[in-house]
Image 1: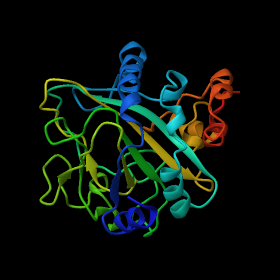
Image 2: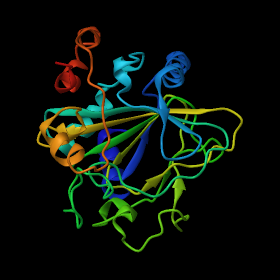
Image 3: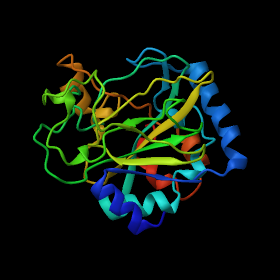
Image 4: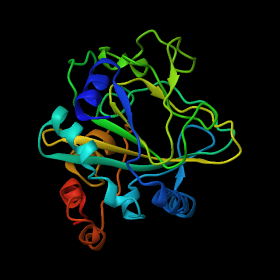
Length: 265
């Protein structure tokens, strides 16, 4: 899929899949490394049967050479401007038999998060989510559920828009692709965790790309924004682990600018 076609799908549908970003010869090793990082130091999310490791880069760097793939950065820069930054790096494992999740849009459009943009949203791209398929994604393995076109809505089911976030939606589909592919979508897109009906874990990563002008400091432990909006109010918000300086120095040169703001003090 070339840049123009990807941008066309993102404008109309809110999502597309880029095939073969991680080569078949490498994806198996990366899948095992990411799974190990989750199972040795990770936790769970609100969806039963799903494991996660936030701030993944601090614990595993096996995937790092691919984060600056030009197919992804060309899309991000076309929609967000230059420079772009990575705001989240999270491993996600859907274990066999996991429950279905609730419809939501990603930060900063999730109305349950302390640092959200209030609805109604302006019709503009402000954040991009990528889901890295380290296992093959399908209806059987629990490929992410999406509602095409929902990114153009001024609200989402986290904002009491009249849609039951726990029930199937008439136009939902599974995002599918071979291991090594990357699902990329406007972070406003309604999506949900799908049940894994296979007999093996479905391993993925959520890596989100932000424009330079979007304030992501609320995600950083100890920041002024987090203290004011989360700690002092008892609110809920995602948290990303800062990247240790030695880990940052070991990153490939094209990847370093994407994480410069996350280096631990």
